[in-house]
Amino acid sequence: MPHGVVLRLGRPEVLDSALTLYSHLQVLHAGQLVYQDSANEYEAARRPYPTTFADGTRGATVLLEVNNRDLNLLLQLRISNGRGTVTDTLPVFITGAAQLDDDAPLELAGMLTSNEVGGDRGEYTTYNPICYYELTAAGPVFDAKLTERRIRTIYGQFLGFRFRSEPAMPASTNEAYAAELARIRKAGRSPVN
Image (cartoon, rainbow, N blue to C red; front, side, top):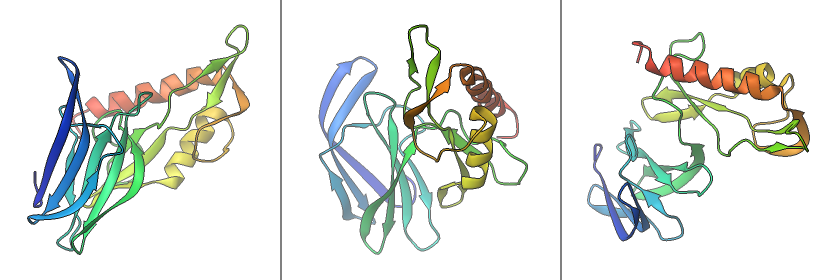
């Protein structure tokens, strides 16, 4: 991998011809073991993950895809001074980097959990924010302002950056949610990438 990063994956479990999970991970940087994990199951065959970024200080940032049984997630591993530290849990992004707001850096967007519908006739849904990240040379950085603005557009209110099952949201917010997902996917296919 770029930036002096080497991944060693062990204990493969082949679930089907398209999916192999690895229950042991070692990350080396400049030939030195900087991180290992056997608590998560990693996927490595789907592009673009794993992904690396240089951080400007002879370190690196690595995004590793973890199979989460609901929606997969990314562990953000920062490598610095011969150590690797998981600094954040990110969503697997909906598309590649795209222009999702009105500033120069491109953005990435995704959610950490699936939407749930409730009520006898599906009249309620959960509060499940789509989170936005600016793409920098050192990797994705959470964009709180854009995230809050888009959450308000979808739900008409802001209840934080994390999934909530209470208070229940009216099912009508699913239309705004679907429209936002379509906007993200369309921008991700545009030639600006």
